[in-house]
Length: 380
Ligand SMILES: Cc1ncc(COP(=O)(O)O)c(C=O)c1O
Image (tube, rainbow, N blue to C red; front, side, top):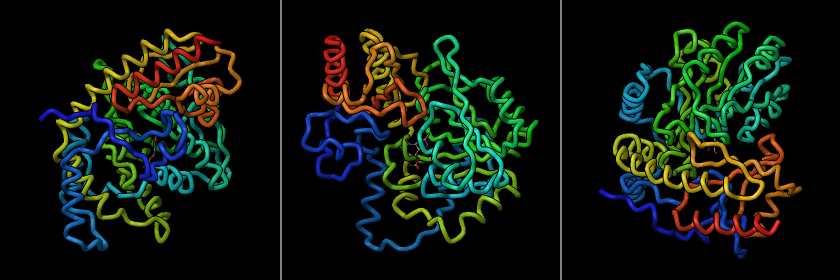
């Protein structure tokens, strides 16, 4: 079956976070990371069945859901996961915050890289810990980890490293060598890794593949909390369904104990949607990746022709991290809003002079957005 990602679906009046921001204004929202595509029909059918059944009660995690995840992680990554390692949580951000509260002593630092998805910057502060940020470095048009600085910081009372792999917003798909070095450094300094892999299904570069941090070695598994979800992949982020994989029993119990009484169970719609997504939507996902690849190529080509704008090759995600420092704009987000395009502000990711563009939308909408941006920068 051919899926139609060209379909324009109005999200007006649906309380969409992404679209509500610009209600009544001619601004195309290309900021928050959800896509303007319908979820796969198999997922929608499952949700319909639950609604038609009519009883929306407390729900246990279906055995078959854990089974399909175990199978998937094995097929995709050769990663052998046991059922008891999987903990269901209502959000990856929730997982980041639990990890920050749970690991490291109160006086220990939490280390992460910048630019980064903003909740990485707030999670340590939410639990009263000190945040240390290490800027990514650009090597051959690719943002990567600065291991020298990282090692210096990990030596200094660090309890947790928060890793975003693949990286939002830079799109980096980390290599086995990079992940191995990271794991070795963290192991040497007794630092736990919380590896947010929510974007792992969006590897767009045909020569790259995602490698779960914990799958690298026994040592990696012992020190890593992996966070994953069907939410971004199948465009169901509003259903609040994700999971942590924690192989080490001690870490898992610590994490679980912090959840007690505070973190609600994942609701039945999220669980059933996840099950249908992982079991029945491989073909939908492959077609989506082909579509996003085309969108990505258009964005990279077009943005690099815009005066003062620069974009590295986007290896993964449906997000483009655009360097606009050479435009000299003080408020690039305001400028592009004036031009009719709503982008995310680099400041919130810890890097001024950048904007993030979400290209998870029909091609025609993307074309219009890029046309507006091109016209606006021409007049600078
Ligand atoms: C890296 C990353 N982690 C987590 C999330 C959000 O996860 P959740 O909605 O499950 O809390 C996002 C959403 O954009 C993200 O990009």
